[in-house]
Image (cartoon, rainbow, N blue to C red):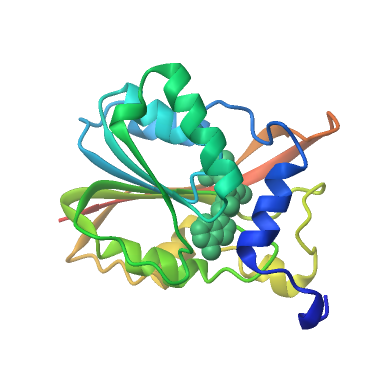
Length: 213
Ligand SMILES: C[S@@+](CC[C@H](N)C(=O)[O-])C[C@H]1O[C@@H](n2cnc3c(N)ncnc32)[C@H](O)[C@@H]1O
């Protein structure tokens, strides 16, 4: 894509969400449910919360959630879902560009689920910065693609795929030193997923759960 044609991230994502009434399933991410169900609720930060399914799930389990996304369209939708679910008072929605934003305060859980973008997004920098806001004893929880789905808008060239680390590679690139972090989960497993046109593919997710000592 020519730089002159590249939309600003906020425009890109607002357009992305405007194209459909609902983009994601409305269900929380399966890895979040599996890994966080047993964790006692506290203060959670959801990075790139999209339409808010994870934030709603956390709030319903007693977490106080700050949910951040760049898209006003997604956040409006998410806030409406939270009203309908009766958990709005537990969630603060923030429209921020994570490239420029630094979390304020400390969190017992910082979650970043599929924080990917077909346009510029310094994911590693954002996650590094976020890791500094995890409270002692708190969790950094990152789930991401190890390869993009065949139907995604992301480019499929080698450079872009190379930016997708396994959980182990991510822990190293984030500098999660063993004296400061205990890695509780580090997996890169396949799962069956259904695409927007009903296509089936096996996708590998990197799941990293690390606890700050
Ligand atoms: C692939 S979606 C994942 C949404 C959600 N976490 C989920 O698992 O369904 C990526 C999300 O990151 C958001 N995003 C992309 N770039 C961003 C940025 N620079 N700052 C904040 N949010 C951003 C997008 O608006 C989008 O909602």
